[in-house]
Structure formats: structure tokens, C-alpha cells
Length: 374
Image (tube, rainbow, N blue to C red; front, top):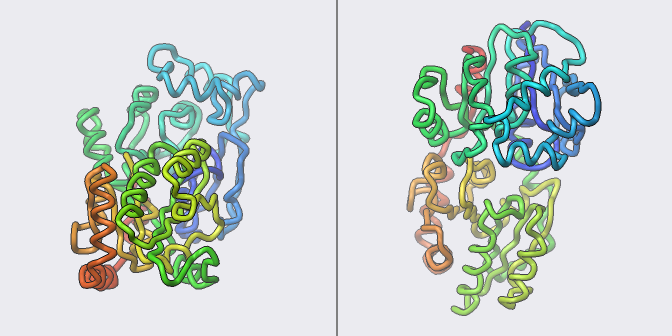
């Protein structure tokens, strides 16, 4: 049995944490003795872990050094934001003042978080392992300069989409032989099972129900979606649009909803432990992001055989073929509203897309095999 260490920010927050949990749940426990090492003590999503996994935390000499590393503390956020480690060896200093709870030798060690955080430096400098790998989760990666000096310590650099891998290779051609794609995995049977647990009480059966899942942040493009909703309302389309997720832009988005008089059309439902019945029972799933790593929620909508509209991102084109299993719209409210209207009025198109989605065979055996090959 191989000893596997997975380093991550935490078990709470957003899409990368959900991807982490799905990855951990897919590990073959007959092959791997798994330890999860966290930077921050946030275990909000730990209940989603299906298997017994040892959870440890990076140890720091004192709280000052912890605050410089933490993604929940202002100093740590600033260091990452301004890419300070590129110019001053802050992470090297933190590595000298942090340590593993114990010092075993691992067969494989993974920095699953990436995102230019201290985790990448910690694993590179402080972890003893035969092979090391780092994950990249977003096609936009200004933060990567923060940790570029550590890539030489890694044997594999995985992007969760081909677009991420290609972007990385353009930036760092000398590491091209190390880079590969490792798509996010998901428990298909669990998604299907949980999608039948209830029918959303917020839905109205005689209107067009639209769903989007994602944090309330600029990245997810809710401002454009709300403006598109106003266009739909002006055209007399009977719809309700439900956003599932929480985030720092809630007040800003609530203000925009009020300003555009959409209180009865666009609803911020907040975080839901089980979003799948909303996706399963909606008429249309929309993911209109400014940038993404892969789009886990789009994958979930495909599993649940829904017609989908996405923004015109390279990463979404790895999942959606325009007018075959979804629609791809340019990133503006007019294009989005036009695509939604087409889905609303053109039942034949919507039925064709649903039929094609049903034909898709989604499984992840080939992805998990890549871990064995490291």
C-alpha cells in the first residue's frame, strides 16, 4: 500500500474544496494510505467525506507565521494577491517556521490547492516524498508567479482542464514535460441519488425555472445574469432564476436585483447542502462565468441530463459542444438573454440537447489511473 499525502487549504469554501473531497472519495483505499494535511482549520464540508481519512494540520512556530500563510488571514491574502513571494522569499521563511505533525516518508505527495499559496512551497520544501504533484484549478493564474520557483521540486503539474495545461505550458515551456490534465472527478451515482431527495419548494411548475450554482463573486458573472434576466422580463417571458451559493458580493447583487425590479424573478438562495434536486428539476441550467478551471457544476448538470448554457470560455468548450449538448453564448447580457429565449421558445432544440446529453458516458477511471502512473 502506498502512503499518499494530500495538502490543501481547508475543507470549506468553494469549488476547489468540493473537487478535493470528490478526489479523496474516489481514492482506492486498498491502494493508498491517505493523510490529508490542511493549512487552515475550516472543516465545513468534512461531512461529505465518505471514507475515514486522517486529517492533520500544518504546524507553525507561532500565530504570526500562521497569519502570513493562512488564506483566511489578511496578511496571507495580501502576500498572495500582490505576489510578494516572487520578490521576497516569504514562503521560504515560513517553511523554516512550519513543519509536519510527524515526518514520515510518502510515496506520493500532492498539493491539491495550488492557487499560488504557501501550500505549494511547504510541500516542495518540507515534505519528504518519492514523487510530488501540484494541481492548478483556474485558467487565469496571475498568482502563479508567487510559486514558480518551486515547480522544479515537482514531478507532475496537473491542470484540471486542457485550457489550464496549455496556459501553463505557454508561461513555463521548460516544464512542459511535467504538465498533464487531471479532470475533476465526481461520484455520479451519488449525484443521481441525491437529486431525487426532494422537489424544490421554491419552484413554480408553470414558469421557466433556471438554476445557477456558484459562489456570489465577480468570477461567476451573476451581474451579467441579472441584467439578462431584466431583458427576459421586458420580453414577457415567465421565468424564475435561482442562484445557489454564498459569497462576498451578496449585498451588491441584491442591490442590483432591487434596482432592476427583479425581486420576483431572480433569487439568491444561499448555500444548499444538496443542490442537486434544484438542478434535476430545473428547465435550464446556466453557468455564465468570467473564468473557470473546469466547471464542476456544469459537469453535475450534464450528469443530470439538463439543457445548459455557458459563457464562451475555452474550458467550457471541453464539456459543451455548441448546439449539441448545450449553448455557448458570448459574455454579455444580450447574448445570454437571446440564448435563454431560444431555449425557452424552441422546444425542439431543447429536446435535442437533452437527448444528446443522455447519450454521454461520464466516468473517471482514466483520471484516477493517472495517480497510479505518477
